[in-house]
Image 1: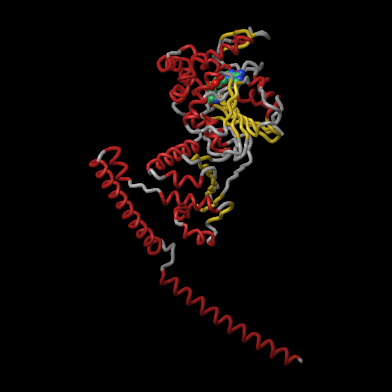
Image 2: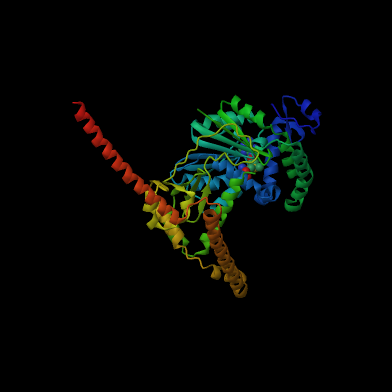
Length: 264
Length: 223
Ligand SMILES: C[S@@+](CC[C@H](N)C(=O)[O-])C[C@H]1O[C@@H](n2cnc3c(N)ncnc32)[C@H](O)[C@@H]1O
């Protein structure tokens, strides 16, 4: 699998990668192990996920998500899949936009995250047009050409075989539909990258310990961000999966990027 | 950071907070529930989309790829705005939108264009005008009687002073343009100028008539 290598990464970890091994943060694990390890992480952070999201990103994740919605072209009657949707931040807004003629499917591999999302959305009074589906992004249980929009916010980096997930998304998108992938990426300036590294490898796990008493999960989050493909690599992966008109926008100096692609 | 999204987020937050301040807000929101309204501001060509439900308003900046400082924009996605009602309005006329009696005038002046379901715009106007917001009362609830009154007192003094400064500035600027820089004509010289234009037109007409007579005579002579 093509992965972005960054300068301060121990290169041995990448070079020792065998075909049955993948990375879990900076660790090498068996491919079939990664899914359950990721599941453990999100199971353990689920209850405090929203609070930690705000604390970790200083609330900026809301603006990144808002930008994603603005670029989605969502309208009344659309069918939207919020993949790896976790606690349903995007789902909430989509649900109000697509109205009763449309639908939003909040899908996640992790039942704990879905449960927190379900409770939150119900508390917001959003019930009618939302479906909850526990599913692995690599093998989506939906018919072909089912959705106008698929979004995946901060989910793709946790998937073991990203190319399978992209192919699966391509299949369930309607012709003319679009995929939006919001994910951590590679900062465009080296100064920013240094600051960001210090923050994510030193401060973030400490914050995780303080707020959620879960240093390891937040260390994994920081490491997995680092191991995720950079902007151009991800765009190329999307093209390989069949997406056309692909493009990306760097947000906050490339800390996060929004990739878009269409199925024609 | 996408600056526009930060602003639209703040606007959405404020709009919903303001709504909650009036206990009757749901009465006004109800007719708008499930509807959307797009507002394109000219000349900046920024479209803002409002989505209404019976409990809140969502504000979107559809497919807006501009405004990201330092962003790599590889391709423009077509701007697809699909709303029940679409208003296109000159920024300068925005404040007049609250008054529904002004709408026809604005349309005639080409400052406003309305497409789609007009009732959405009317209900929104009713919502904005109908909200009963007594700021002093709201502040009294939040921070107590005395601070609320002193804040409101200071605020209205500031507003009055700002109005006075603006008025003063307008007069000074007007005088400077006319008297000192002579960039703008005074009303008196404008009237003189227009009299002179009328006179010139009169003499031109007379000259044209005489020329026509002379031409006729010339033709008759030739024959
Ligand atoms: C960081 S959270 C993001 C949640 C939400 N989209 C947000 O932006 O707040 C990542 C989510 O991806 C989910 N996830 C991880 N691997 C997945 C997979 N293979 N298929 C579907 N979801 C997955 C996790 O369970 C988790 O809820």
